[in-house]
Image (cartoon, rainbow, N blue to C red; front, side):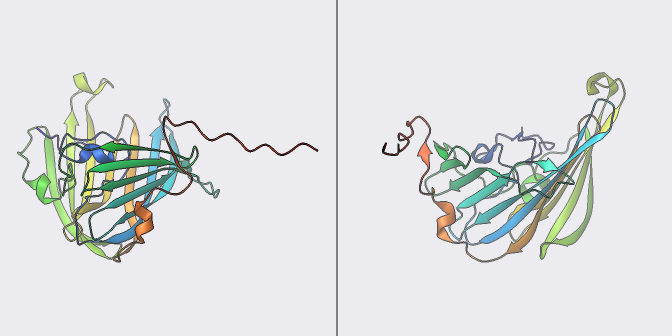
Length: 246
């Protein structure tokens, strides 16, 4: 049974729903559905709790895109301190084509890429988005409480908000006392994906991912291709050019 508490965000703990593994570890889950193209940015705010309870505040931005054929691109930068104004480097670019079920990861720092075939058909809904139609079809859990909150607008799109809380007893929490873990999802029916996801866990901290600056246009096709100069993993790099001696 698919867990309703799995967060398809920074924690990279994905369900076994078909297609979920195609984006494991890639941040905001993008459903590879056709005829709903867009280009946007994702802002991620993370608070990591130190042993003394004080938070380390981090942030990062990313670019996401989906074309009319359902191909997706998910590009993320490194996490930076909250107050940093430095430009964060892009650490990974993830491409996925639902037609051939090929998942490609490009690593700009090493100029390498890896292509993996995905055995199952691609998912067409966020696998753990309980605000989505897929989430509402899951059986009720005795360990959780759901609140159907409201609708609101994110990046110009109407979204449905659901909050889910889980009480973890003291014997299982690892803290010696009962805790409450909260997940909140804002789902766009028009785009078939979450536009914001938040998880708060008093043991580890919190993470919030929100789609921003969304433009409903078909992206440049080059965004879904491997850039020139990238080498596949396992292939030796070409020898460096040596200048001629005088």
